[in-house]
Image 1 (tube, helix red, strand yellow):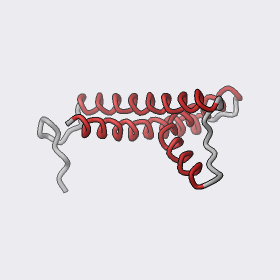
Image 2 (cartoon, one colour):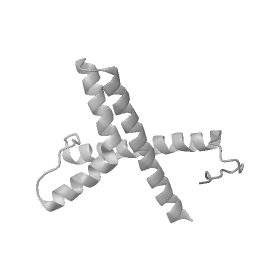
Image 3 (cartoon, one colour):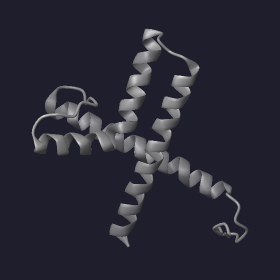
Image 4 (cartoon, helix red, strand yellow):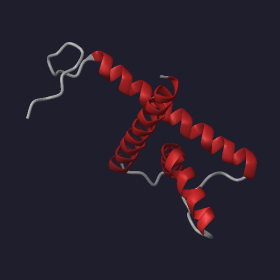
Length: 118
């Protein structure tokens, strides 16, 4: 199986691709923050990873948590760090999960925005 070719045609992962992934990660984390802050502004309660209730509220909570997930993970990690109930493995795994989730969310948002523009 041949590797995908980049803009240089040599199949290597370059600096431009790394910068795009970092930008997508930032876009995803900002989107998570905006959704979480908007929810807190409307309901006067912070968004939590609790899903339950009627079918409509479950769908709404699932969508909100899917978008705001990276910030919820970061908030839980900060609480664990403040409570001193931390191990380096848990902090590293949580940080990695939040970054990957942010990157995937950012790629989705950038892809949707580019498809709307072009």
